[in-house]
Length: 307
Length: 277
Figure 1 (cartoon, one colour):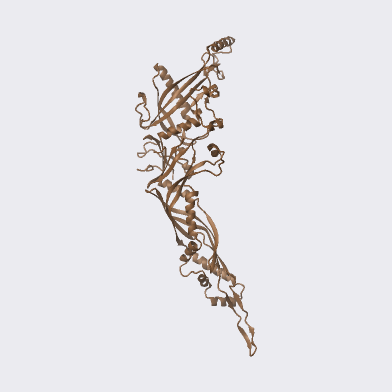
Figure 2 (cartoon, chains in turn purple, orange):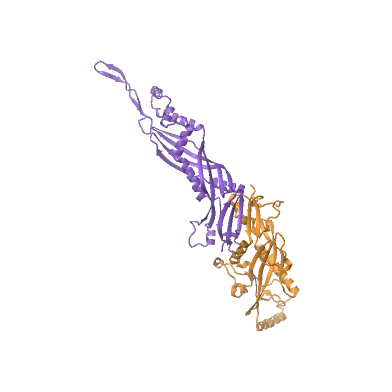
């Protein structure tokens, strides 16, 4: 048996994980041209909830960990087919032809014609589930100078550490919910932008264009290739076109596996601190053969006292 | 049965681990185990037991020896004393059950929930030369006549005795055995674990009165001098987990499921901790 054993119950492990979970908040941004339309995005996420189950096979199962996208801002660039109205003949003379034409007005000549800003922060959630093993690693603080002794490093706040990470065995992410309000936000954004775009036109022209186009919302939806299912379209946009879910999964895996340890302690580890007016140096114990194992009751960290 | 069936965190240290910790303690805080006068501090080569120490001890200017006043020579009114040193070496620990070394009959068998400790207690006395002692004796006689040494002034503040030089250091070592338990007390710094001496024995000194007197002295040294410096905060045993989680750890209250906390059993010190969720 090892010199030291520290066991943490499943409840304690949940607290350790919650501390890591609540520390995670990465963000990203990017853009992509998707042919008929383009998209720019700024996205970030945080994690909430989730259930922990320690497994007898030395792994940790995390289920239903909510990914809350916040911020999640998309700007859709939509290229609407060019539409021209007017230009027809109002008065024509024999042998002369048309002497008076209605003015010709063309719209949607730019590419993209409209930009639809969509702020859907907190309205899309995913769930992550996965299995992890506890990976023990030794951390040498990059701020530690080569000339420093262990005590110097401790005094400078850059001691070496033993760290315990959750190393993914597998990780799965699903888009599970899109709020109904996302559709309303999209429709309102389209209406607002188109009304703004046509605002320079006289009322009769605006009505005429809308009469020609039918509901403009449907047109934009068609350009965006939203047929029936907004959830499916958004999932495809975020997951496939932007690669947001892959990014989230990669971030979660990287952060848990290498950035935020579920637990750590200094090496050497102090059992008696500074003492007295001189002061006497702390008594610190080097820890070796450090390992962490999990069964279905608890996580146990073991270590031997080094020379 | 899980280790944490009745607590949030369980910590244990094996007796072999404790013995290795003791080695680090000896190297990093030698003055906890070696006491002596300034002369021994300045001349550690004359100590009964050579002190090995961690390089950081010297680098940070830590003492190898805790400095004590010279041992007064009776009849000099505290004017003169002898340099001495006292060292605890070769410390070895054995947690219940007793299987690491043989205890003397007076302490055997080791009671449940206790640990045993064996060590060598070495004492050195710097013995003054006879010629110099005669000279100092003449000086004391003169000062008595002059009234400079007045045995009646018991309450007068005194300077530490002046050590009498000498060439010889006489050393002897005693094998000592102790049994101990761990008490838990609340301090301003939180709950701490306090080692308490339960029994003490020096083997085979004659006459018996000398043995008893030596035992009394060494016991007092351990109880009053050394053990108070070996109190461990509970949090030490769980690696600052409370700070890590922002919780206040405390030893799990005693119950039928946790009859002893800390527990000394199965060659381990076990600690059960609740985190106050």
